[in-house]
Length: 519
Image 1 (cartoon, rainbow, N blue to C red):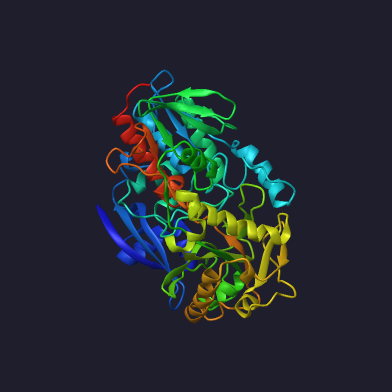
Image 2 (cartoon, rainbow, N blue to C red; image 1 turned 90 degrees about the horizontal axis):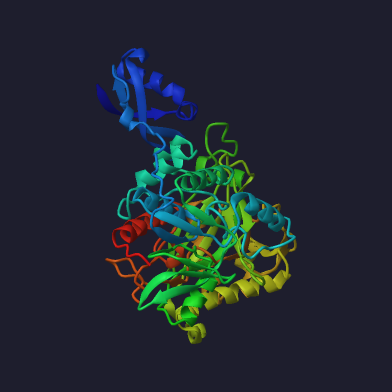
């Protein structure tokens, strides 16, 4: 017999699955041995009064879990000699597009400007030490995309874009812990994602896919309005009947190439601001009422949103137990992002705090046409970089930011290359900094103690999403001027985050396979 139950668990029981069967038996008044299996459906935390966990689960009384409901690695067909489809980018959109193509009998040729995971690790280590930025291999570029080394949260649960469960199950098949299938706020962690991405590449290679790393796309091969392939920076041509463009939100050279060649692009509203860092113990105390949360209660997080002078201001990519990282992709840029490992053991908590921008905000850069918002983004990043001229970033105590004074000194921080005291009000446009100040006052009402001299603000959080959209037909998913080119994922303006990007890549591959015309 199957039965759906809802259990209320204390933290020590919630994070020890071996205890679930015993707790369910107490709840139902039956012997533990009668429960053959428990399938968790959703695990969530309630910290409104006392920290408790709520587990919704399906239990199997007197019967086993059917084999077809267990998670097994899906067998892929051999596509080594099948029709090719080019996939530009090896982030979530690109990798899941490649998997979907293999499942439909097509051979993906994955073109990635950056390095493999192992090569990326080396370059990121140099960047964290403030020694060198590789513009092709960093926190944004390389195998796995921006999400691999910047946290790995899987918060998308909307089924409107596609099959969320299939995405999560694929990640589990390739090494992710199965709790991402039922956690209310699933998170893999920067320490775990590289192995999962490597496993996905291995599965694709075994099926006959090709990967070309250190290969940057510089142009399209086009005949009579239909794409026939791509050209790389070394002058090589790759030919295929369809190209899935999944470049990520920081591949600005791709936008510039398309604009130069006369292909339609659109400026897109995005958000920009700062990254705020607090001691994790302070956030724990605010959220839980305790600075020492113990072994089983996770590092506290928050999600904040408000309206300030008619604009949305919100927290973005909140990283409990996390680290602020340098996310620039080129010279003369100061860009920050956040990440956390699976255990979230850092003594710091950080989050982007950003203001929603509108078309009127980048009128000063209108001469750049559809790249106007991008030009604004570049300008602010450069203004922040000029403060230090190196890999350090400008920073300020939160209280000093509100008062408009330069901090005399700064508390400890997770940002490894280093901080330099500076008034961020002199870097950010006033319409952004003033709205941030209004928002921080509101957030302090919602989280008493949020405004603290122990909190710092760092600049700039500017890569929340792409400021450019590559248009596509809603039915064919093709670019209106290039039949066979399928823009998708974050870089094309149709997703935000690992899961939504993966689903968009998957959907684009399905349509490309159904409409395929050989080159």
